[in-house]
Length: 379
Image (cartoon, rainbow, N blue to C red; front, side):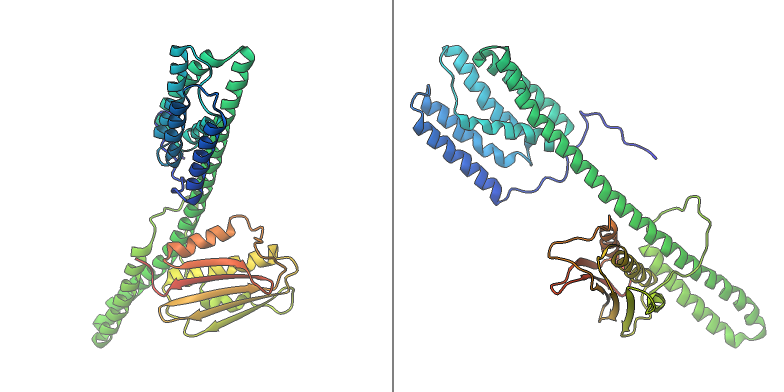
């Protein structure tokens, strides 16, 4: 395994930052109103108009805290640093409103969503501003220690949430890679099976051409059909090499093999219903329908409490095939079975083949898993 070892300076910005939404605007509006109310309620603040103007002008930087965290931090702490410099130069009382505490949100956002370079530059600027502010307004080492711990708390929170988001992204990538490997292996076996058939037909054609020339056209047509199907599968195949596995070139299990999952002599009972012409699916789709049904059945048996019946339904539609797996286990609205990353892997498999996937509790109880896949391989 090759590990990408980036320094903090080169670390890229996380990609999970959501866009500006209604809550962001409400947050800004709340701080703006708080600043204006505080300015009215505290007539003792020195240079109150200037302080209020700086606070009101700084607060909208909260809208950029995820998309441009370094710019937002520079604006917020720049305003705080300007007040500290004015306080030092004029030798006046403490300047600023309590609403200026919004800058700690910008400090958290810098560590949470900034790139490595932005975090380094931003933290250096923040350290200078904080040092000036503590020199101007602190009354002793206790204030310095308390203020430092308070700010480091937001830095730590940003680092923790950044790490958790990174772990989540890695898990999602691992799930996606596992599904890609599984699909590539299934397609590899299918393509190898068709290539073997082409080789057999070609060998037979060499024999038939001399003894029965009229049969050569049939052999060539069979070779053409197998080659066309193989080419379609090759275009859909992910290039993945097998490692430390013995090759077993055989067709994968498909929709036609689903009835073998049915059972009536155990709990839960399993019923399989095939509706419409389910033959003729692309091998990758055919294998995917079987794997999705198998995984959904396994999840129902292992994780659905009180399940007594599982129904697997496959229906051929105009340009796709629909899989529906329903159980009667106990479930409540919003509950999710403890199936690890099984549901995510199933959704990833369906999406990789150009289909859709959904899973959730039924209004009347139980759990339903549904997938719709195209008839042929996706582009």
